[in-house]
Amino acid sequence: MTPGEQPAESPVPSPCTNVCTVDPKSGLCAGCFRTLDEIATWSVLDDEAKRAVWSMLAARRNETARQNDRMRTDDAVR
Image 1 (spheres, rainbow, N blue to C red):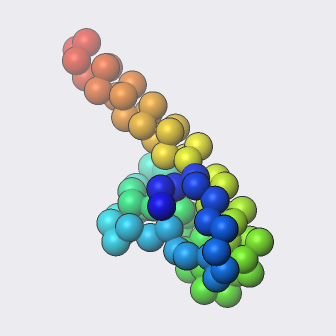
Image 2: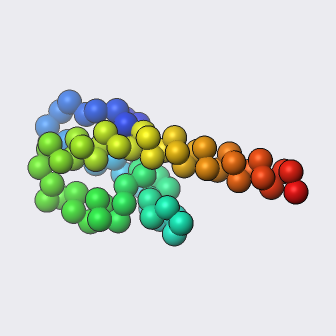
């Protein structure tokens, strides 16, 4: 399952991809695109709250990709 897909099953699975590195600028995990608070509270969230987190992940992944593309473009221009 990729970030942004809505898991239908219950319990809702973790979006963790075992790439646990938090970007200091965005505050998001580079693997699953969750915040530290979302990661820390995952085990106590109900399924509705977990699905709400899942619903934000694709947008975060896309925004991170856009920012990375901009940085590469800026570096190439220099």
